[in-house]
Image (tube, rainbow, N blue to C red; front, top):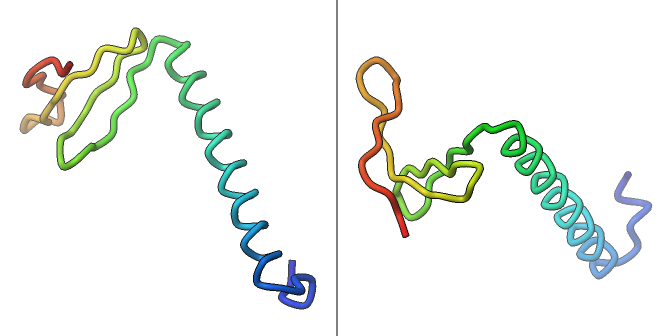
Length: 76
């Protein structure tokens, strides 16, 4: 889409909202499919490295020197 196709700032804002929603929905589907295969997901929250298991349990983890996940503690 070119700038000429967007007539107002409001139209641009609406397009951004639509694209953001589509991206979030796509990501949710990909995460659900990954977990359905029995795989954990990894992310960071407030500086804490988190591993989320397919059953929903959360763990703080660190990588050891070999790159293997080391569980620090289970999170509530």
